[in-house]
Length: 246
Image (cartoon, rainbow, N blue to C red):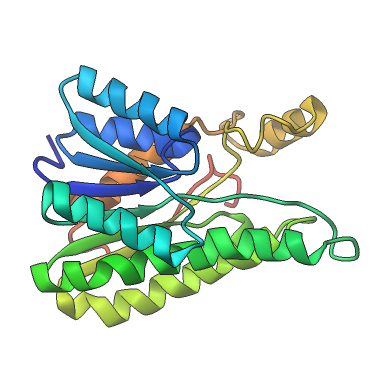
C-alpha cells in the first residue's frame, strides 16, 4: 500500500490515463478525489473504486474555470481534511497547422492544459504548505519537449508545464512539496482513437518497444512519483515513451 491514507486529487479522471491512475492509486491505499467534465464517467470510476473496497469521491468541473477548481478543493477538504497528492492530468487537443489554427483552438488547449494546471496548483498549494508536505505531478508530453507538427497549441501548453514544474520545484521544495512532470509518448486513449490506423502503425514502427503505451503504463509513472520511493525526486521530467526519444 504505497499511498496508504494519502489523499489524491486526479483531474481528467473519467477516462484514459486519469481513470487508470485513480483505480491504481485507490488500490495502493489512497483516498481519491476524481475530477472531470462528465458526471457519468466519474460516477462509474468512483463506484468501481468503492466496490473494490477503496475510498473515492467525485466532483465535475472545468479546470480552466478557477471557481470550479475552488469548489473541487473545498469538497475534498470537507470530505478528507487534507490534500497530499495533486495529479494535473486533465488535457485536450485541438490539432491544426499554425496557418489554419483558430483562436478557439489555441485558447481551448492553453486554457485547459496549462492554465487548468495552474488553477489547481494555486487552489491546493496553501493547504500543502500548511501541512508541510505534498506532491504535485503535471502531465506534460514528449510533444512539449520535441514539438509535433500540427500541435503548436498542445506542444506550447506541455512545454509550459515543464517550465512550471521546474520553477515550482524550486519555489516549493523548501516547503516540503515535490513537483515533477511525466511526459508520455503516444498512448492508447480517446485522443488517439480517432487517428488513422496508418498513422498509428507508423508510430509503432518508430518506437523501440513496437507498441503504443497503455494508460496503465503512465499511471505507474504517476504512482512512482507520488510515492515515498521518489522522496528525493524534485523538478524531474520523466519520459514514458517506450524509447521513442532516445
